[in-house]
Length: 335
Image (cartoon, rainbow, N blue to C red):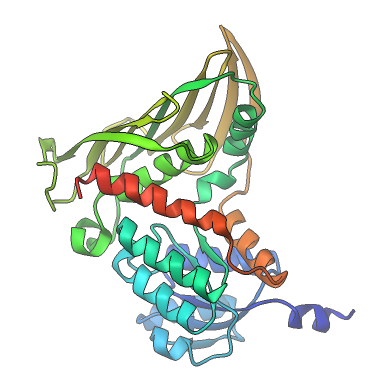
């Protein structure tokens, strides 16, 4: 088979939203030669020009409607959160696969509608819960699945971002779905439940704060600090804390600790980095390294989606777990 034949077998992808994340995910696919970039859509001419420099063969348009006029197999969505559900539904209605930046939607009901549409259309639906794809979390999950930790009875998760979002819409609840809990806490909830094979969450308690002031349970104000406790049907407890603009003495604090009856394991970011992670297993006072940087994990989720799409993959029932994660976040927000 010639290289031209191989290229023609790659999925034809359109990219909607060409900010930093959208362009990074596109570049990951280009680097891995995992797709053909057919069309680029963003209301910003400057963003379109930057993206087209990396994919000069692609058409550049301003809207989703223009994007959907092209001959595509799938759409990658990296737009403001309030738009994700309706844009994913529009693409699925055209019979296209979808890969969406997190959150897939703002509420469990919106997530459920998108998942149901993907199931009905038998189209591959992916969400960029990228921390699952770090080597550190893969190793820890293997430890849990293989029983090396014994019974996991407690999980402690933190994600503190010293900077917070740089987009104004992220601080408007109607556009974002919430504050740091949906922006950062979604990763923590997902990692905890994914590692533990998605046990039933029986109870959720939470507190949210804005600039140091407690928010009422059902407040629509956007929080910059949140803590929550998840009581699981297994008897285990998950505690999460996340924040924007916290004074932590470093760029980020990202950690996941799993405490078992026989041993423990933890993922921790290295030197305050958003990208470098190490994993360690604990046996009493002994430490056994499981994974260390470097680890080029940022594009693994979308590359995996593109490769499954190239292989003819349709709806994957595993995506339904995103609804469980969203349901927990709804309870964090008291809705």
